[in-house]
Amino acid sequence: LSQADPERTESSISLLETTSWRWPSDEAGIKALFTEDLAHDILRMRLADLARRPQTPFVAAGVGYEDLNRVQGFRTYGARARVGRELEALEAVLAEVRRLELHGVHESELDTVRRDRLDGARSWLQTEDHAPSSEATDEIIRHFLDDEWMAGSS
Image 1 (tube, rainbow, N blue to C red):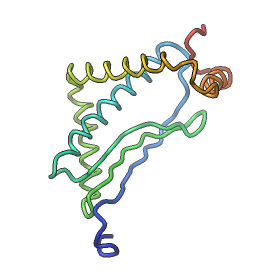
Image 2: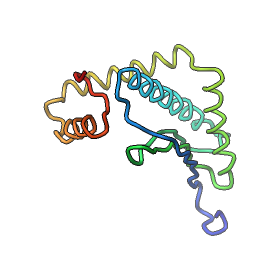
Image 3: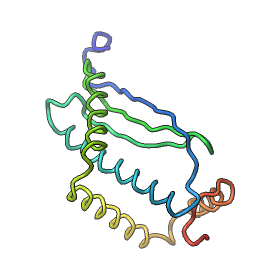
Image 4: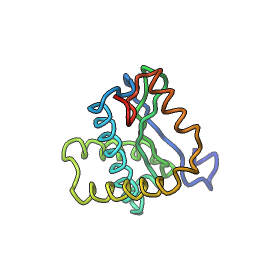
């Protein structure tokens, strides 16, 4: 890769892990989904901190989840790696995932994510009447077609 373009400084690498998926249909499922989403936010925050270090094998990295259809989805782990360090970059991302699984999160990390989420919710409430109606429509459609839990539903 670096021989093909000597000016190239980074490349992308990602790992996709398929998993069963179903939209949560109750409050417990929503809480589990929310908890996983918080963990992803904390992982992204940790990876961003690591990316600022010059010795880190990646310049940016992330984790996430995407649903493919009503029954399958995939977890994503990826990085914009420094050229020649692609495998090392992916290993660093996965090591951070393992670290979170083994040791959990620090209270200050959780406080930061909570604060960011609350700020986002406040911002959304201030602009709610300007939000595209397609977002609400999509949520209602998922509620009826996929049995996704929806605030205000029983």
